[in-house]
Length: 304
Image 1 (cartoon, rainbow, N blue to C red):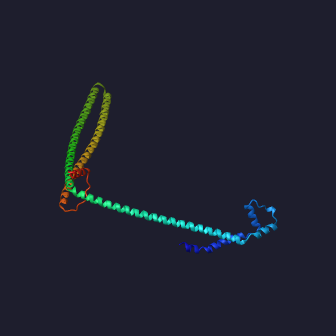
Image 2 (spheres, one colour):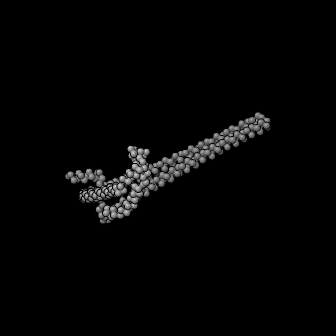
Image 3 (cartoon, rainbow, N blue to C red):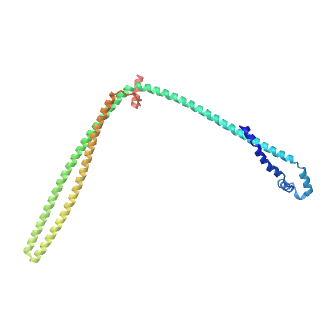
């Protein structure tokens, strides 16, 4: 892989060498200035133009070209060395990845074998405990059905008792309100009669003017009391209607709860019938997850 790449580079390297050769052929004045910048010992003022020409003539152009070629060869070797190091690192990384892959395959293989062994052991334990599991499952199902039926019955009885209690309270409250209304009407009537009697007494004692004033006063008081009584009755009727509506809503909620409880009991009964039908059908065995109590019984059975 490295040889074709090295063969395609000479043209480019030649192109890079040319500017260096051009730089090497600078004028004597530029060469002299460069040397004075890099070498502090060189003194420009102490050399004559003739001496400068002698120094320049002593420098061989072939030596400069040779130094440039050597530098390029060294740079090329360093580049090839770095490339080889990169290739070695890539090969080493690929080898490490392959080793890691083989290691993972081996671990997965060992894991699969362990899982297969565990599954076989679990299947054997499942077959050994299947009879005990089925019996416990049947007991739990029967217990759950009995508890659900008892709970539904208790809730229905409680709802009926609460409805009866609320009904009695409403009847008692209606009776008390009717009695209060009758008493208020009787009181208003008695007060009105007393006022009329007082007016009659004043009628006899006073003149026609006093009689008219007394009648007007009695009429105003009677109307005011009648309006107050009517307002009170109106408020009582509104309160009664509100309480009746709340009682009705509560009765409906209790009836709904009772219906839902009965529906739940019916659903549990149907589900039990469906499970009984399904038990009579042949079906494949399924892996049963043992509960703590089942595991304890299985261990006791195995120890015996």
